[in-house]
Length: 169
Image (cartoon, rainbow, N blue to C red):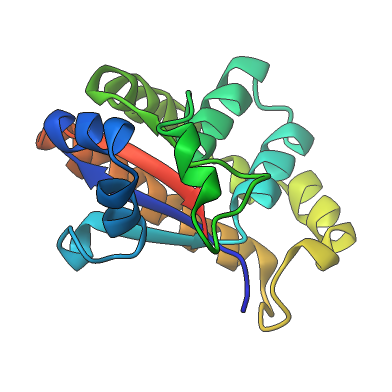
């Protein structure tokens, strides 16, 4: 089974419940709690997106913002690492609604730079072929699709004043 990056939008109360209850967190990470539209599957895109931004010479602060938007902040519930099928190397992390708003603003700034249209980034992605699923034929198109989905996901989270939970599954 492939390992992919997932995000979920949830309110502050649900995030707090996840931090105190492994069962609640497991329900969210098992796609049993939230509406399907409140989940985003980023597949393998986070690392290649960051690499493309670096190669396109995006300011370091925006590369860090992209990393935070896909990787989160603090671990939500360290006890979750003891759950069967959890991934030790990638704990469940989150951004509260304030962090989500900041991430959204920075993603919008990054979007205006159009970094995924950089010829240098496209050339570098050819060298990153192993970082993509075997079915990806157009790495730049793959990254554009996932970046647009990420930006839209955060825009909705801001509109609804939600937090974001992140984990690899």
